[in-house]
Length: 604
Image 1 (tube, rainbow, N blue to C red):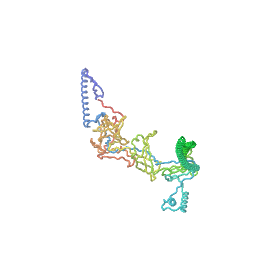
Image 2: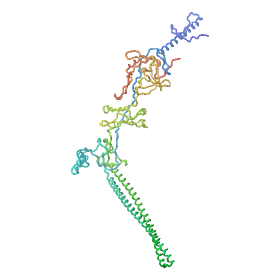
Image 3: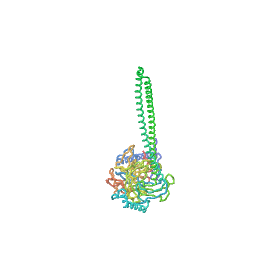
Image 4: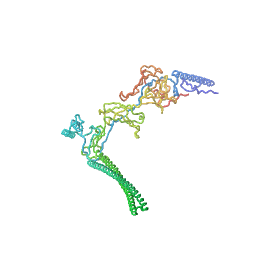
């Protein structure tokens, strides 16, 4: 078998040519193949030696770097050959993570009522602001004895007090925007004489119906007396029947005895005939008494029906009284609509009419807004939470509110109520926070920044956002183990844009961080998987010992909070040592990168 000479291509350093050395001039052609075969065997031996040396170097690097990472990790692209790249690294920090969101919110009054006219008419008067004074106390003491002094007899003092009150009302200013009002206080009076006339008419009808009820009650009493009289007459007729029966029986017995005496010729027949006439008379009296009983019964039935009619008429009259009373009440309510009152304590924030203006009721379609009353001693901060953060908001969630228009006035509060539903268009949820405003420092309509605390994760291991990089849909960190950089797939559990809480994904398991992971935060794109790196303390150049991570984070990679100290997250930092950083170096030309593409694997 002929040996192939293309396994090792020697280089002729004499003339710089590549390929098999040519046969020197004057050499024997028979020696040329033998020389080529010798050179081929020496090249194969040299390649084997270099391969064994490379394998020994890999084994030595693995022994120095420690055991391989658990789980299926990406194989290194290259061995730890060449110069180590200085990088900045951090360790996870144990602290309390706060999930929060900052959104704009607007102030709304606690309650706001827009007052419209229920009845039509000319505006008769606008309420005046009358301050309570000695005249009011005097009138109160005279009328009800509720003033400071004892009740006195009405007289000249009452007249003077009433006159003083009327004069004070005429001289006072009208209720206008900014005027305080009390619940139930009359603000506007509409002149509606037809309503007052209708009220008087309904009141008269009501009184008439009440009189008819009394008349029906009298009729019932008369009918009841007639019924009692008919019953007594019926009883008398029944007694007459019993008497007629007794008389008839007695006369009939006498008649029978006279018949026996007449047969014995003791008496004459004329006496018997006379007694027979007497018997017939008593019988007719009996029948007459029976007829009287029937007549009295019929009369009793008649008066009883009249009594039932009277009682039914009384029920009708009572129903009519109820209808008349309700009509009167309705007319009274409509008449009271002519006086527009404040629904609650607050201030007037809008007035759109003056005395003498004609206003129409709200059902006419041509009405206009008369006044607006707002309760501002307590305000609502209203904000709309996006769908992503809405699931974390609950009543009682802490909130910090800042109003820049009030010299950066900051106050704390809690979520009072949430809508538990998203808006179909904006996909946001309405949230309200109650704010005390007794000093009237805030005004409805103002805007502010609201920072809501959505979640607190205590005793968490946080890493900066600069420690992550994406490759496709997967998220990775670069972890330094034994001076070598390895990428590790992770899954995010918390992310506020600055700090994150992640878990390592090893196979199908999620393994939490233990705090000893040294993560690269700089030059990630310049590192290959398995690349040697150099981490040192700032300014010292000292190599960091494996397994002793410092607990101070890279503050340059973490932006400060936008709010004041009140809203800073509580951080439990263990000051065990300084942060591990190293100066950044420019990219090395031709070095494979991890970020942005999948690094090629080394040949088997």
